Structures are given as C-alpha cells and as structure tokens.
Amino acid sequence: MASEKIYLSSPHMGGTEQSFVNEAFKTNWIAPLGPNVTGFETDLEQYLGNGNYVAALSSGTAALHLALILLGVGRGDEVICQSMTFSASANPIVYQGATPIFVDSEPDTWNICPSHLEEAIKDRISKGKKPKAIIAVHLYGMPYKVEEIRNISDKYEIPIVEDSAEALGSSYKNQKCGTFGDISILSFNGNKIITTSGGGALVAKNLQLKEKAVFLATQARDNAPHYQHSQIGYNYRLSNISAGIGRGQMEVLDAHVELRRQMNQFYQEIFRDTKGVTVFSEPSSAYFSNHWLSCILIDETHCGFSAENVRFALAENNIESRPLWKPMHLQPIFQNVPYYGSNISEKLFEIGLCLPSGSNLNKQDKLKINDVLMRFIDI
Ligand SMILES: *Cc1c(COP(=O)(O)O)cnc(C)c1O
Image (tube, rainbow, N blue to C red):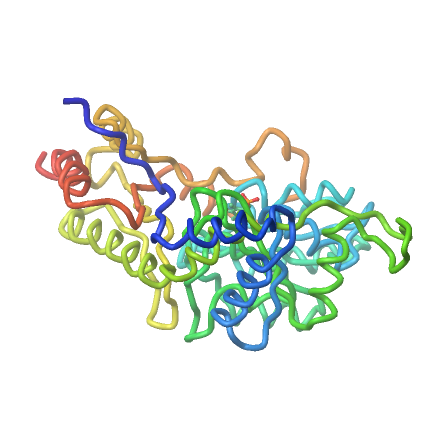
C-alpha cells in the first residue's frame, strides 16, 4: 500500500475554523472586513499582550512592505536585513526602491549577528548613509538575540522591523515574539504554525500606527464621500473568510506549539548519541522556541553521512525534508548587494536540514521517520 507523503509542515485545523467561516457566509460578510477580521485581531492582541495593536493583512510579505512604508523607507535608502532568511524578508526593501544590506548570522540562534550588525551600521554611516531600518528574523521560531539587537538599535537610533513570521508562540524571557520590534509582522501562510490559508499581520505599538497601516492596506482612501486619495494605497487587508479560519486556529495555537516542541524532542532523542549531528535547540532557558521547523546540522567528518544523504533517503520514503534557508547574499538576484559577515550562514546552509515538524504528525508518521533516520545511526 502506497503510504501518504509526510510533509515538512502542513495545515492543521483544530475543528472550529469552519463554524467561523460558516458564520461569515450566513451573515454575508464575504469581504476584506467584518467580524472575523476584528475578532482575529482582538485574539492576536490578547495573545501577544503588552498593549500591542494588530492589523490583519493579506500576507506577511504585505505586512513587511507596510512596515517599511510606515518607517519612511523610500528610493535610495538602505535597510539592513538578516541574510539567512526567506526571500520575503528582503523583497519589500526592493519594492520600495531601497537597497538591502545583508548581515550574517551568529551560531547560537542562527539569527542576525550583533557584532556584524554593528560593523555594518558603522560602515554604512562612514560611507555617508545611515540605514533606515533593521530587519531581524526569528528563524524556525528561534528568538534572535533580543537584547543585543535592541541595544544596537537604540544606540544608533535605527528602528527594528521584527520578522516574526515563523515565531508566533515563541518567546524570550516570557515576552512573546511579535512584540520586540518597533514594528513586527506575523504570517499565516499554509505552512506556518497557524494558517488562514494565506494571511499576515502587522503588530504596532500604538493605535494610530495600526490605523495608518489599515488605511494604507485599504487603498489609502481619504475621508470624503467620493473616492479621494492623497497617498498611494494598497489592497492588503485580510479577507473575513480567511480571518474566520484564523479565529479557529487561535484556539489551538498553544496546543500546536506544544506538539511542535514534542517533534523537536523526538529528534533530540533519535540523535542523542550521534556524534556530528546536532538538533537545533534553545541556547538558554531565556529562549522559548515554537520549533516551527525542527532542524539538524550534520558534520559529515564526524558521522560519515551528509545532509544530502539524509534528504535523499527520506525522499525515497516519501518524506519531505529541506535544506535550510539559502542566505540572501548567495542568491543570484542579490549578488551585487553589500554583505557583512564571516561564513556562519553559509556553513549552516551547507550542513543543515529541516525535518518534518508538523503538529499533525501521528505515531505512524513518526515510526516511519524514525525508521529511515535510524538506518544512518546504525552504520
Ligand atoms: C513566511 C515568511 C514570510 C512571508 O510571509 P507570507 O505570509 O508568506 O507572505 C516572511 N518572512 C519569513 C521569515 C517567513 O518565513
């Protein structure tokens, strides 16, 4: 019997999502506004705490784009961005006609390296341009070095855009990821920790900023009976149907974080005694990762097999795995962009692998994964 494919991270419904969607149909709120949009925003605001304001948007990418616009990023500006990330962190810089400046990772959290960040800022300033923003990412749900990055941001007075697309449910010193930036963003794409099929959010520190984001996301219409515009607008609001899925997903978010963390534990146990294989985990108890994806580093010289060997073996058994994010400074599209770093992210990309991590993987799936991985360990 052909078994079903095991995915890296697939949507996992909790059960009540459809009733919120049905309610939208029943009340004819089939629009990019309505009770589910407002309800989802309130759910997220309560979850994040700390007096944050949430604007529900059509994607995390849209949220990043609006964050840069709200920070006044425009043509000719420079914006610092973590190099090791998904391209969506960096693309909105280019949408604004600005230039990305890529910065390497540090080995503890795999996120933006404080010392290379400061080196980059100093060098850009010495070349005549102070960067307009710092985009820091919590990769795979692991919080970046929150305090170090904040100190540098304060010292040079450059705001942080916190890309928390992968880190809803993670926290640092008991404060939720998605609340550390001057502006923060979340994603609810199909593969994220919770999904609205597609969607995102911008997290603001005050109501005026949230309202400005919503204004820009709904075509920047001035207050007039006719359609009047004094700014360029966007169509970036979340659908009331999608937001209904989000409301249902919020009910199971913490339970799903716990299940993802159990997947990480599952891999820790498999590789506990394997020299050369490390399962990515929190550097200290200050960090709490949602372990959106569980990742391993494989040092072939110690264990005799490579990340590619493991990826192929899993693929042969219909199990999905994937190399880590390829750093932006190695991407063909960004080959002429300035980069500050050593080769930490390059090395991580070379030896890393993301393993199936979904909260919906069952006992049988785990047995199958275990089976394939154990073949490597037994050699
Ligand atoms: C998914 C993701 C995004 C983009 O979110 P979308 O909702 O897919 O547009 C941005 N940054 C990171 C790090 C992501 O993983």
